[in-house]
View 1 (cartoon, rainbow, N blue to C red):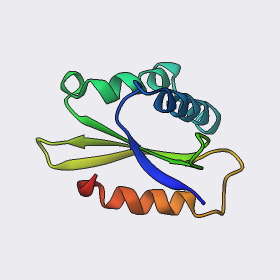
View 2: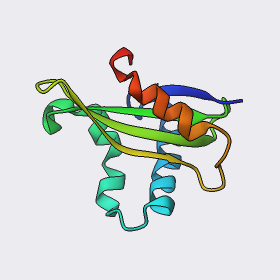
View 3: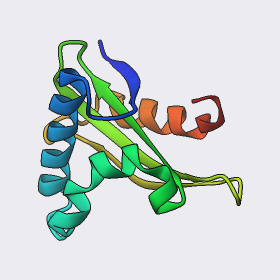
Length: 112
């Protein structure tokens, strides 16, 4: 059993913990990704004006703070356009429907 929720910032301890796990997944699954891109996720969430787009971070967790997967989407309001930058499951978390559920949730991003 898992849940999908949106993380708006890193102010709550659970959000901070899950963002840290997401950053670890990025380091593992996308090892060529620059560290600066990984560490700026909290800033992307808090500063949409600075980056000129809204960052939507969806996380799949087990309800106890263990991240099973995530999707990182950028929404450009001026263009009415969403860009799916990353969708990934945690290592050794395949075949459980996490990726499919995330993608389905991203497809209805206008309701987020």
